Image (cartoon, rainbow, N blue to C red):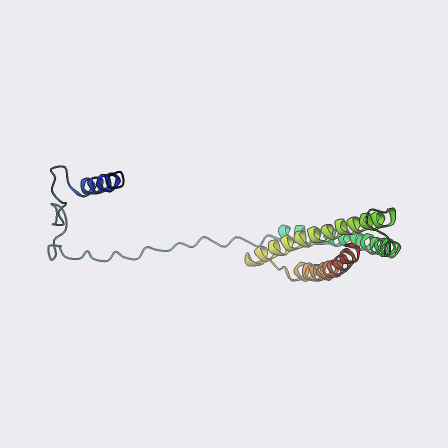
Length: 185
């Protein structure tokens, strides 16, 4: 009897949901105000097309192009500095790794190699940040181009810089991964 009670309760609730207030099933007949087939009036005439007003094109903004060119120059200088620091750190990391080749984990030589690897990775992250900033400037130049500005020279500079940064990032990842594998024990 205990199992039958929930079934009876469920059936009673479902019947109550389907019935109307006076106990009858809901009708699918059309209600007053619903459109009957064929009782519509004539179709309305199509409206005349609205006049399309195009705003006058804004003049090209060369200040945005000049600012982007200056930002590319700044990023290029920063990248040259980071690239030189990365080359120096690469030598430090490889030297520390050579000293830790036969060292056990947590020995001073192994810890020194880990420290140098961390410093190298920090420079790699900086290279990635510079790439992101250069990509933003390239996007800004693309928008300026869409507004009619002449962006060829700064966009070429941005593309060259992004290519240099990508090459440096790839070299960093290759060295970092091989060095990390060599230290993993």
